[in-house]
Length: 178
Image (cartoon, rainbow, N blue to C red; front, side, top):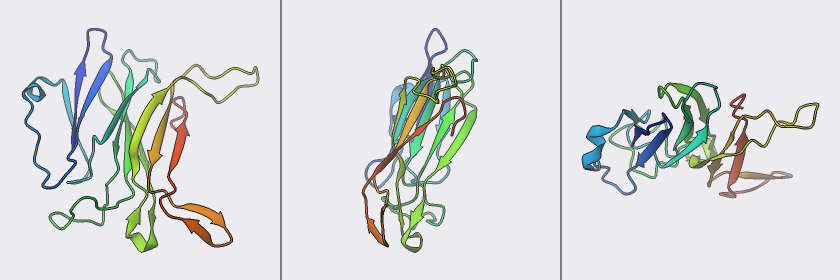
C-alpha cells in the first residue's frame, strides 16, 4: 500500500490513504498522486500500508501536525508472491512528523498460534485530544494523544482460556509515543 501526503497552506499534513482492499493489488490510478508533496510506502508488498490514516496533531513542537498510518496485514514471514491478503500478519502503525514526513515511531503488533495468525495491529488509527498522563498538578501534558486498534487481538481470559479476535484498542501518549 501507499499513502500520499499533501500539505495545506499552514503546513498541516493531510495524508490520503490508498490501500489495496482486494487482490490483485494493483496501484490505484489517481491523477492527483503526481502532485503529492510526499509519497510513503509500506515495509513489504501487500502489507496494506495506508489501510488507516489519521492526523494526530502537533506532538513535537515543530510546525505541522503529525500523522499516523496503519499497515494491519504486515507479515515479515510472508514473502512475495506467495502472500495473498489477508496474510493475517501482526501489523504495525507508524507515526510521522508532519513538517517533513520523517518517521518518529514504529509500533508493532503480535503474532499468535505459532505465527499463523496476527492481531492486525493498525487496522484502525485515530488522533485524539490530550488525555494524559496526568501530572502532579492534576493536568495533562498538553500534547495530543492517539489510538491504534487491532481487530484480531487474542484476549487472555485467564486459566489458559483465550478469546480469538476479541479486538483491542491501545491509547498512546503523543509526548512519549508509548
